[in-house]
Image (cartoon, rainbow, N blue to C red; front, side, top):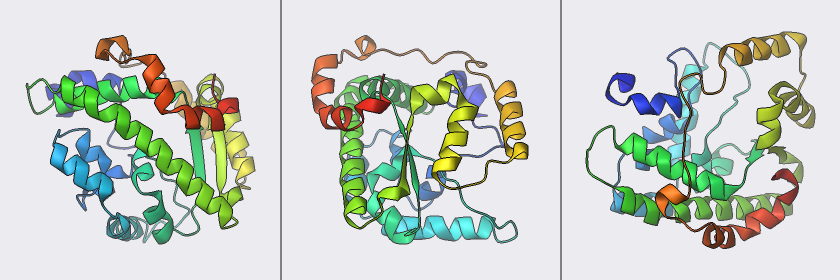
Length: 244
């Protein structure tokens, strides 16, 4: 149905019904998730959500996953950038969690995120929210990066520096199998031949741009690269070795 009413979205983020889905959806069931703000442009909700304590949302998140895996036990592997809204709440509910951080120049991410929000919010409205998106989302992305840095510093101070694994996004795109194998090694997890075979089969079937390309630029949004670079400079400095 989403493809019928918003065919542009499939080229950006395709969610097949028989494959993993970002776990932000579960947080959204508690009505405390950034991903809701990618679909509905509600400034008052955005302000409340960013300031909210997300601990109860993560408790709900854990309960849902426990139900889903009650008959299929195993280690959870979760993915979503929305976790950077309140990583301290995540750690309070999942104290043994470990984190893989995929690094990409956030200035480019800002342009991508703005276009993603434009496309998603266009599913349910014909109103032009571009000025609001341009004004709001660059700072939201900057705040997420600030939260990540503060959280990592706190975890390091608590003796959990080894809970983090850093991955260059460019490496993941260039050689996903080798990069994932390095992640497994860093996390002290076995990378079996069966797992590698399944990943290669998946990569061969799910090729990049198979539903079209996601085109975006800062110029489309009248955003200044220099100003954005200055906003995210602490991140750029800290993770320079993982950025191209």
